[in-house]
Structures are given as structure tokens and as C-alpha cells.
Length: 476
Image 1 (cartoon, helix red, strand yellow):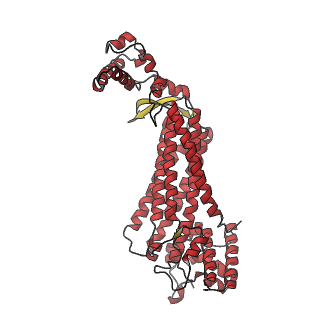
Image 2: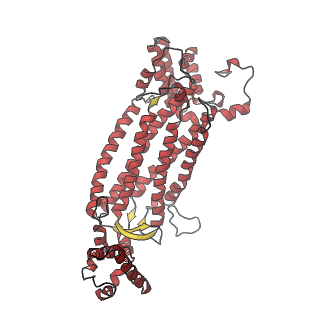
Image 3: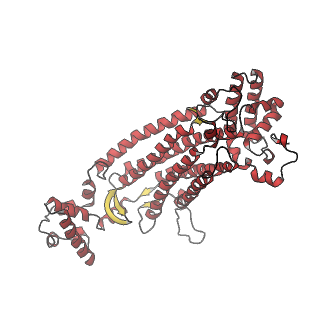
């Protein structure tokens, strides 16, 4: 008979067991379930709901169960439906009927909400650490390429030259927002629902704040109905993860383009590429392509979770069992992608000469010619028109701006003088953008220095919160 089967007169249909059981995926919550149970049983003894000796027996039994699950010795079965019932059954097998006292004053509804929050706390720290490692890899490439100029694009058309370091720092700050969003979400994840019971609390004189403190939560969920039915923290994580994958995907797209023969701006290390089964010359950026492809998978989990929640009445409903697989898969997808990305960026070869030649053979310095004329007191709209005519003439004659002689320039405007050739050189164009956040070398150095301070802050947050998680370790 199932642990909840007292009011039933016949066994559950085998197909129902198979369809409703979640142990296949929620076994990931085993250690968190036991962490929560250890704090819960300690509280039960403190509040004199069970005896100290029973609590000690249960605690030792839980630790023994944790070791057996970690080693693979314990058998987790669909007959016991989910990780909570499996742990309880293993506990009773370990210590006898006294193990049945563990569930006093709680429900699987508040228990699963607790386990998911404990799981997600750890995922936030791990993913944040990986994001910082990726930021540092991009930062290293930026510092190594403060004199590397490449074309900057809008509409995928060459627009203005920028420093490659500037381009790398754009992603550093993009991922910084991701780190900050994950850190900010901690305060909403880190509230304890335990003690909310099935939906209305419990008649036992429990101490919810004691359990929250033991588990290093910042506080408790204030309303029992909300505590068991809230999955906003899952939606928020999936949303934040979707932005992370969007940013990864944008970088992937550029790596795929840049490593093609048409661009030839970078070469990815062989360790992060694959070949073709048919074409022996191929070197494919499959890691970048697959990370780009998995972005849609993460988006799908977000949409799935939102759809699951949109019509649910309070409080817990079985629909909410669908909250886990998408969350688990998103965590694993992010960890897999980020684990590969930092070393792929670190080992990437930057082809500085190819980038510079690309800038020298385009019209991305045309804006600077217009700005030059504005500096000679020509209204910008008139300067824009003049430069447009210069560019059109160059296109017709298969030339670039720096191929023109001074006399040819002056055919379009007598305001143009000999210094124009210095003004239009790629490095001069880059360094002319000497505004805060611009691509001038000194401004990019400012960004690099600021990022180092942000890394220090990020790492401090990670260490602080990782320590809180490590305190709860059950199995050495």
C-alpha cells in the first residue's frame, strides 16, 4: 500500500502510476529533500512535537539514506512516485516506523517548493560562477587586442571601425547584466515555504523561522496559499536564463560568421570544432552552432512554464509537477554551454591583420569625412550630402576614400586639406570616438578597468552564497 493509501480500497492502475510518477526526473532533488528534512526534524524536536531521541534517530537515518542515494546503493522506484516518498520509504526501511514521524507538520506541497528553492539557489551560484569565467575570458581577449581594429556593423553592413577589445567588452557588460539579474533573483528564491503545509499551514506548533534560519534562508513565505502555489521564482529563473542564452547566441552567431572564409577574422581552436564525415577540408564551429540552437529550447521551457501557470486556481495542482523538467533542463543546458564557452574564447586566435585589411577596404571612415567638414563649419546635412557623392564616385571607380588624392577630394569640397589622410586612417577614426563608452583606446581601457571591479564584486557575491550552500552539505 502507498504511504497515502489509507482511504483507498484498490491499488492504483499501473498506467496511472507510470504517468503520474515523477521520480524519473525529481530524483535530482534528493540531497535538497534530505537537507530540508534534517532541518524540519530538528525543529520538530525543538518545538517538542517529537522527542529528542526520535529526532536523533531520524536524523541519523536521513544521513544514511543520503549516502546510499549518493552511492547508487538505494533503489528509487516509481511505486513510491516521487523523491519525497522514496526518501521517506528508505528512511522507514532504515530506522523503522519512527521514520514515519518525519512528515509531521508538513505536506509534499510545501516540501517540493522548498526542495526546488534549495536546488535553484545552488544553480544560481554555479551559473553565476560560469558567467564570470566567461566574462574574464572575454576580458583577457580585450586586453590582448587594444590595438586591433575591425569593422563595426549595423544591419550587417560595415558602419564604423571599432577596436576588437571594444567588441569583446560589449559582451562583458552584456553578461554582467545577466549576473546581476541572477543575483537579484536570489532574494525571491531564498524564502522558505516549509510550514505552509498542503495549503493552510498546520495545527502543530512549529517554528517556521527556525527552519528557515537552519537552511540559510532570508525569511519565510508570508502566505501559506502563496507559498505552495508560487512558481514565480522558476519563471524568473527561466526568463533570466533565456536572456543568458540570447546573449550567448548572439556571440555564437558572430563566431560562426567570423570563422568563415568570407570573414576570416578569428579561428576557433581545433578542440572546439568538428569535421565533416564527407568533406575532409571542413572545420565546423559546431559548439557555437549548437549553443545557438539550444537557445530555442530554453525559450520553450519559459513559455511552457508560463502556460502551465496561467489558469491555475490556488493552491497546489498536479499541473505544477511540470515545473521541474524544464527548470532542470535549463540549468543543465546553461551549465553545459557556459562550461565550454570560456575555454573556447580563451583559445580563440584573433586575426589582427585580416581585420585591419577589412577596415582599410571599406567606407566605414565616411562619417569621419563628414565630421571633418562639419569642423570646417559646413552644416552636417550638407557635409553628409557631399560625402555621399564622394562615396558614390569611389564605388563607381572601384576606389576607397584613402585611395583618392587631395585634388580628387577637393573636387567635391575645397574645405578638404592635406590633413584629411591622417583623419581617415582606421586608428585615427577609432580614437576620434573619445567619449565615455566609446571605442577610443583610452575609453576601452576605462571599460576594462571598470570590469575588473565588477568581477571582484561578482566573485565576492558568489563566495558568500556558495558558503551558505556548503554549510548544508549532508554527504561528505
